[in-house]
Image 1 (tube, rainbow, N blue to C red):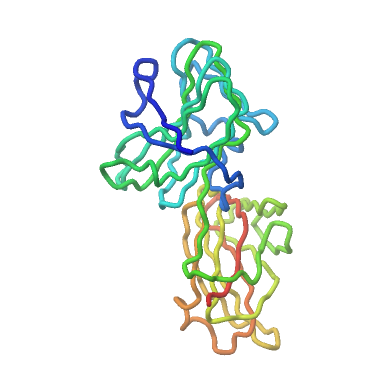
Image 2: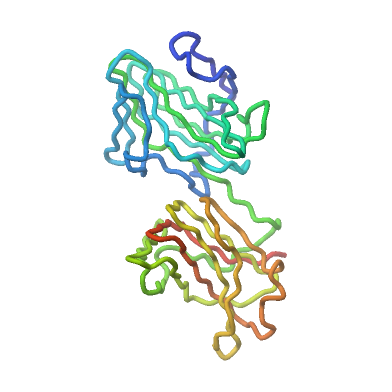
Length: 314
């Protein structure tokens, strides 16, 4: 059921002039690929008004307004817009105020286009919302990036959010694509010297150490090679670094043949896919099995990888 979002006419004069419609979430599953988890962000990466206090406690994002004026908080970094972004919000408490979340849109030159409200909670009501940003794009201009801005009004106002997430829906280029193997943080990993790597059930955190400017992480488990193969990496966080994904080719005897660059110099978060058919001439004819290697480039760079999937198209 649609819920109409109304604008504050006097209390929040800085908000967008365009109201949109957003929908309470009936599908409570998390987005397939998290891109930006506001609760996991260090507080130093936030920009906010002086009157707004912000802290994270027990996986809960807490906003407190110290004065009667409107308080706001945002993250300075902008997120690339692909048309597949989802915003998912869980408000557990909104005392003496309403929570408003606005999306600020920018074009390819970084010029501000417009702000649109994507969420407006009700005072005192716990609610979960899940919206697709494609329903809130500006009427004019072509957006290339965006950032979310959280608003809180009223002295003593407090809001507690147990979920505040931007994600991207994952869809394979070719319909009917079937996953052969999924590599996750609890699978075997083999980092090169100079690359710190820590795996967990949520992903793999990589960090270039010392003077190392480039190093790789091998995913040693092998799968049967198919010329109809496809690989998709899911990058959750990327700091001062670029990511390259290689397919490692092996013959029937288990001898290494060569590495094929599938994705090179990826510098943004989200899912990235590469079809083997686009690199057909690079795969040796003797290739019988493949494994994968993830490279990190950039002095003192770091990345969080949710996983890598190897699949076969119809």
